Length: 415
Image (cartoon, rainbow, N blue to C red; front, side, top):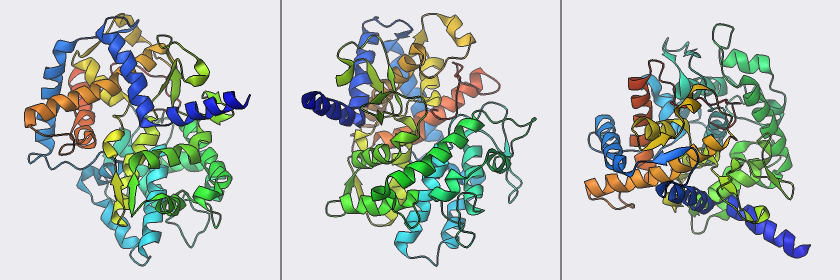
């Protein structure tokens, strides 16, 4: 029994690592190269044209290729408004660590609220009069809600998120903040509320990471600084901390020894001992997106984040849509695209896994064209420049509403 427990613990640690994401997705990608997957074909001859399309978008967005890393902070500048400067001004009286805690509070809340919004939802920003949709809309809405104290239980400290406020957040308040109405529906509102409430409970349960006075997402800063070696913190360790501290918030996921594995799913093409990770495919999309998004606040505090390229590309519908729309991936049965697929369906798991490996392949092609090394041109820059923007562009070219090529039955907690 002890040996089994030790094996399970090793399997859990492995499945929570970016190495496992690359390994398991790579196995499915290899099967696709051999034509052995049930739902998708891989058209290798489309890799170079796909990379060329992404590079053209990168040059359009960043002519000098001075691309920042892929993170939530980019979306806070939607509409060419420097909202981060506004936040910095509001936080100016705080000491550096308190400023970082506040920014981490904001990043964590905003990323966890950043699942697919649907094709009809819009957010009109009162301060600017501008209207935003999709990820930018969710970013601006969550930014304004944070600044207005929606996630703080202390009226004198609105620029924070804490366990008490999150646990007692109501659907009415969340709908109000996101301007939801019958004419402006937001996909997965109930799922987002449950996620916020579960986050509040998780903050209390993991006081070693999130503190007690009060328990805040931003107190993760102190935990990370304790883990740093010589002021250097590996990105995979940030991811591991997020998964340890927030793993329990994900609804309806696979558990191992009572541990919620989060964004981990099953594919029948990967066989083996299930306890030792056979058949399981991890993605940790929102957790990796969060890891990328925590890097900048930590760097502002003087922390060096290392091993960033160990993180993977994000298994979400913009990156995946890019691969489908440009023909790098092809559905064996095109009729599948006509009906919504749940996140746990083998179609979606296969699509996401192939996307992760395809992003590495696209990045390598772009580096070859530019004559750069992975160190000189990390995956995080390729994503930002990049595949996500290219996925959105090609979607708008192919479909008037810019929807992804596959319909996803989102619950507001995966994409």
